Image (cartoon, rainbow, N blue to C red; front, side, top):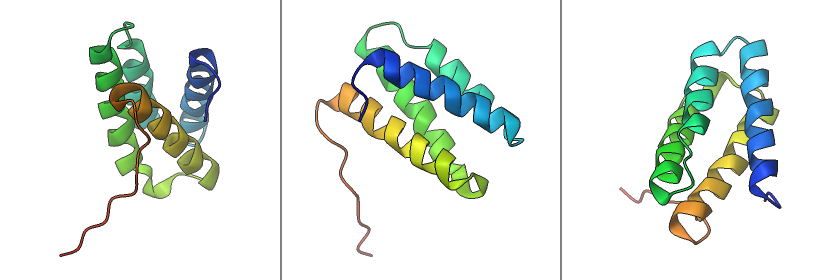
Length: 93
């Protein structure tokens, strides 16, 4: 997990740059715009969480590093919004 918000923001900016380099421009733009939605309030974090989830759903063609980093960002933002760790969800039907 990230030790500070600055570390989270730095990792997010790095993954945005990585996505641009690997040709995933739309996902990079989505993530970059989502980061800009952070306003210090829970609503901003919730909007950013929606964006991270959207990008993570599209991560099929990402590198392992990109997938791992996005999952770590997702975990951190989820915890910021819900004040608890994200758990794996299982579909039973």
